[in-house]
Image (tube, rainbow, N blue to C red; front, side, top):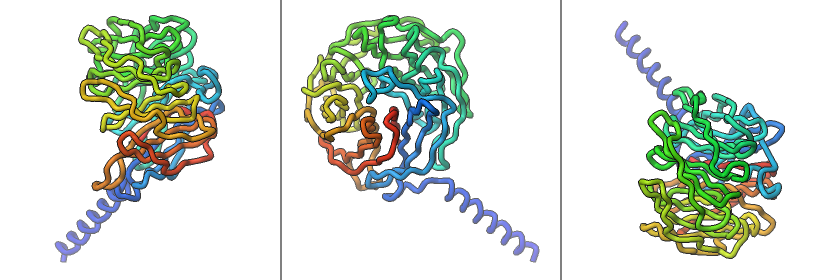
Length: 377
């Protein structure tokens, strides 16, 4: 009798544990496949909104959390580009935490994100004025401070998501007060850090030591005018969008930290090509904020860039800015979805990706026009 009672108790306990595990684990089905995160960049109080992403690409808001800081405006060319940057919200490769800038209060926040929602973990001073872009590699974090004396400043991320400033890591940008920086990002191995300077028309390559401190910087002119957002198509192949020439260039990053031009300023005929997102199939989508369009480029294995579609999507009256891609939700599905922030009308535009083509798949309305920063998982 005692054995049967013990056995029943064990089975009941095991069943409870299974129920808890199932409740806390997201069901990656066609109906629910992942999440999309958006920063409202609200000057009265910045927040991050979490959307559940369905297999058909649609989004359903599930949570919102205050970042502990203030959003910022006025750093871009006009109101539709409040921060003048790419990567103001980034997601760690492991899925959590999120990192988000608070440009209005000169702070950086880390936010736990996943199936259980979003939770503020840490808010710290950014080490400068008007942080507008952030990068993460493992536990190493660097933020780009765009105003005052523009600089980069480093942090370590603890196991619990706490941000801790690295003493001696703040380093001024070579372009000084006129640098007008737009994006910061690590190389794949985390040993180098790149910054695009739109005001001086140059790209900076910083070398880092084992402690995460800058040891040297190499600066060279951009192949196109107004370097803005960039991505690595391969570990040593950099692809950069250029706002002034409405173009995309590609480079080979050498061991000597030089950027050897592969394709120089391939134009798309649009206006203000600032933000760039890559798919796993070697296509790049560029937001042309001034034209209300999105262009697509093909990136060859050797890094060569060719214009695929000057207008892969057109949304009259929109101002497409930041974007993020996510795979479709079923094992048999091919391709992905592209999520684009429209700051002119305060919404998220959803497109189904097929190679270099985009097909409208929905939208989410009702966001503040200050939105900037988006990430998907």
